[in-house]
Image 1 (cartoon, one colour):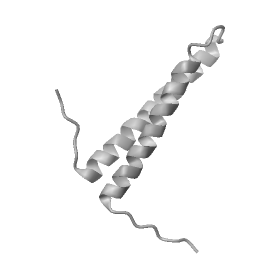
Image 2 (image 1 turned 180 degrees about the vertical axis):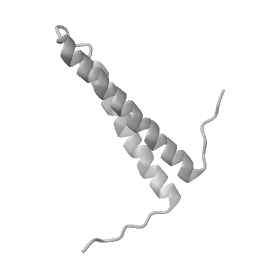
Image 3 (image 1 turned 90 degrees about the vertical axis):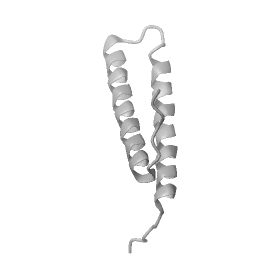
Length: 76
């Protein structure tokens, strides 16, 4: 039996923001991997692709949080 979980829009937005923070931490870690000396070119390219994927995930999570909360980032 599946339990139903209910969240309001702000709770869900907060959950999305927390997950987005995790994506950002992962991106930071992958960039640090790129600084390792002697990293084979193929591995370097794979890590860059992973970073790109994580960046896409971060953008999606941010967009969802913006849509749910109605709070938009300031544009300067």
